[in-house]
Length: 455
Image (cartoon, rainbow, N blue to C red; front, side):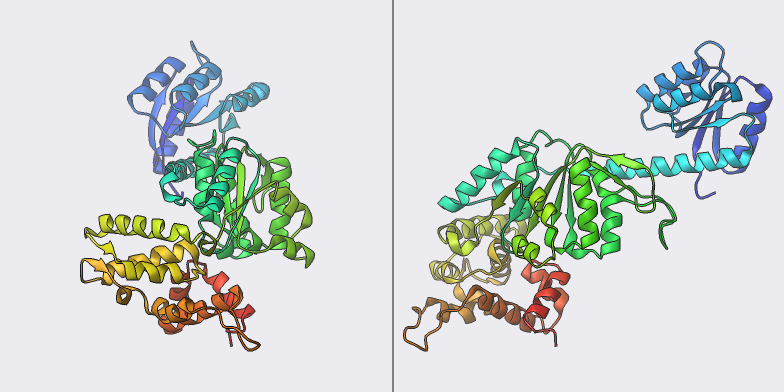
């Protein structure tokens, strides 16, 4: 046995009840017995069991009525019906009423043991799902989306409009621009706000693991799958699933995702049973999906299905007026976190305004956090800012060069410089660099390959 359970055995056959309870106790289960539906309900009231073995034919309240009462009072209890050969139709009706399974009497002990073990696994999976739902329902993130620039306010207004509907939304924007927070805001403003908000980082998981995480798997589906596991689409049932870095998923995962979007149904990896879910899908990417479609890297039908509505987050360099507002808010937040009372000096603020912020709001937050930690005086000064920011400041403050040999750095060049400086500051440690940049290691490896820095 892989686990034991508290079991209530309900049967009016004294001999069967005595023999079966003895065998189940021998296997390590805790047993309570009852000879009627009334006794069963009384026993369940005194000590709620995990599993009930319930005979269909009982004196007084019959098995079906006892099942209905148990399911209404104790929804976490798994009920296995015991039935004779002539009552199969009634047993199937019991399944519709919420019974987990049924066994035909006379029941071999091995058969009962297998059904009990499946019920234990089912109960564990349901408990795991419940815990995830409790942890994944986010608060309203309105306070975390800060900005007064026209571009930012237009984006927020569109997010508010689409929140009330149930359509799929594609959120686009550069790394660190706040795509997950916009997704959280859409969920928090939607009718699904009290249901789970499940985040999946598609870029951080290998293909086989991603499929298992999204769609779940059956026991024995692959090496190491020693028990069945529900997918995150099941965990998000009734709520919202947020697929971050959607541009990183493989062609086979794209096919499965398209089917879920079209039919709201999928199968576990290694399974044959079709599972239907009610889930709203939000997705995000910092890649140009249209260009990926043109290159054959992303399915055109999935792209159009995902981009029913597109919310584009403007990069921080296009809303420089918000840098001061964000900086002061982050200082106040970090003062509270670390129990200090720092202020932001004007010279340091000027340096923040001049920086191009290729890492966007996330980079600004990490920069302010580092400055608050190392600042020894009451005010944050330019020397408290990270060396990479100070090194870039003179070039950023200078006017653009003129003449035939003059060159203004492109966004790609700025990102390349920022990645190089971050890697240098981390002494080449790619994991630490990815955390500072606010991207996954897989995303960083892709950028290093694109920029030919992986040699």
